[in-house]
Length: 214
Image (cartoon, rainbow, N blue to C red; front, side):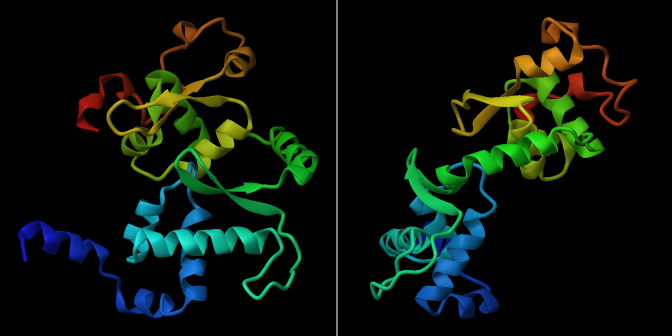
């Protein structure tokens, strides 16, 4: 066996406890659900297969089964209550979305949430995006030293940031601030942003960080 094959086999290996959870089709679907609940962009069948340690064809079958279950059907042909979310296949991958039927309720929740003050973590993440845009979540995480997925989601829901294409190398989504962000600050462009140090101690050296390291 080649060195590359050994590396692939090792990466596919599962801890004993995780392997026990994947012994049944139900366990595999539960594992897929767990991953799908934390992704912010469609994830490919190949990526899910690598994590779960099963062939992509098997993952595809379980994803379609999950989608049917969320839509109110079972493998046996019985019907179950339709979930408030659905599993869609798009952009080369899979992701969970809230159903269109509940759009008004979800929108009201998001609007109500906009009245709350941003946390320190959200402010710091927003600052990194504002001063380094366009930037990927991975780079923001590397700069802040913590996972920022949920914070980025919150900022996007509040209309303060938006997706703007993908990185040419990694393919990751890039983010920038919005016109609404500038409107809230009373500015005409990001060029009018003030020096960051006095507002967010700890990010004083943001301008000096070399993106080539990420």
